[in-house]
Image (cartoon, rainbow, N blue to C red; front, side, top):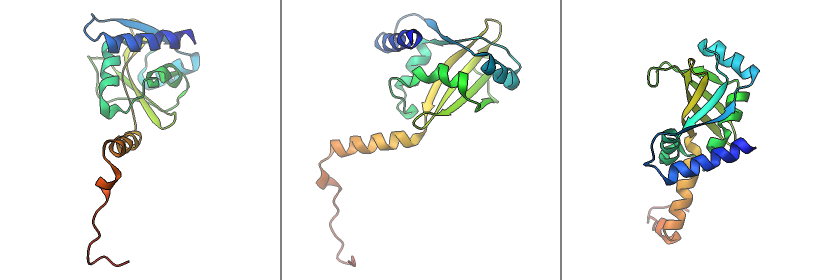
Length: 160
C-alpha cells in the first residue's frame, strides 16, 4: 500500500513539474512466479519494477492512451499476476520490450524495458483500449453542445 502512495505522489509530481531532471523510482518487486514467466518470454531474470518521470508524462498526457490518473498504479499487480505476456519484436533504447496485458475494467497494457544488468523492468508506456475513450468523448460532446444540436430535421421522404 505504501508503494502505491509513493507511486501516486511520483505521478502527480512528474505531471506538475515536467521540466525537472530525469528521476526514477522503484515501484515494486517481481514475484517468483512472475520472474519465471518473464524468463520464459525473454530469457532474462529481473526482480524489481521501476518507472521514470518521462514515462509517466508520456503515458498520462497522450489522450489516445485513455488512462485515468490511477491506472499506472496497476502496473506492479499486472506484471506480477498476468499470464498475457509477450516479447515485442521491437526494442526500446536497445533493450528488449515485454508487453503485459490484463483486464481491469477494460484491457490495460503496460510496456516495459528489460534491464538485465541492473535487475529491473522499467515501465515506459501504458494505455487502455479505445472503447473507454469513445465513451468519454461522447460524454464530453454531450456536455459541450446543447441537445438540440444533435436533432436533425425530419426528411420529407422519411417513412414513419
